Length: 425
Ligand SMILES: *Cc1c(COP(=O)(O)O)cnc(C)c1O
Image (cartoon, rainbow, N blue to C red):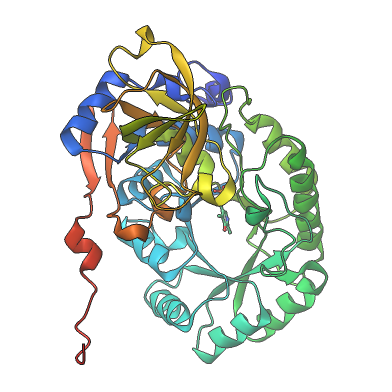
């Protein structure tokens, strides 16, 4: 694709800024559910590529690092690495996955947040084998611990810029004392790290997750402070990483992010810097590329309320219970269009009142109907648990006409596999 065209990809018909739940092919999703059972995550790799292409077009000279924690499926990681993304990792496990997915080590960044010893041991060992790997630290303590382990490789400093943003207070990291070295102490920390023979390569900050609308002002402020720090830094920096957090619309009436506008504002706020800009989108690349398929097992009237019980719950998709997040739902029943929409409360099988997907208008649900839950590609499977001794669901990837099982469904024996005999019982 030519540059002239790619700058327009963002809003083009082939690559719209958002894929809405209605646009998924119901027949194909029914076939996948019949073949693999439910609950079932379906991730469309073609859509992941489109999302990456829009991001890369909006930030043509920036380094795009996919924040793996949004979806660590190997197929997703591979797809993004092949498309040109680096990988931002939040743990040793994610570094392991990034390398296993074929990400070149110079495109892997490990961001250590209060890192357990095992994670640092792993990262330092990995860096000995792959010296191009970058470790990002957010505390003097972590620098000390890396030095104790003999690490003198590529180091990036996570800064607390004092501004945060995001769709829920639980995901606003920018001003949270947990994350990063306070920005006013960053220059001395960078100088000290360079003196101690680390190869100081970058500075990093992340405002939070799911940023859109008015919160963009906070993001601009963060970027501006990072630009200032880059100019004041006592060492030459290779990159200024301003994090991820690019929001996607979860409700039909919400507009998608104006990515070109965000990119322009980011450039302006950053100002003139010698270093390369880096961004770390997670959600934006994978959210609308995934749906969760689930079946209705119970329909009941409780007073005035019509409750629809489904086989997916907070253990499969935690965001509604955890963040009060809204996810669109759609009936995939073959005759859904012929049925009246009715207002229902959708609830999962977990013995917990928080296990609800909230109120929805659905084509009069019947037992056995297949439903699709939208925008499930980010922080969906990743946050799945076995709470209530429920096996985690399977994941299928689709790519054009092809589809393949990506992660098999857990079984009841997976749920009990780690149990050991306690000798006196
Ligand atoms: C979670 C995270 C991201 C990605 O956030 P999204 O909202 O998914 O884009 C990027 N960088 C860091 C350091 C993160 O922790």
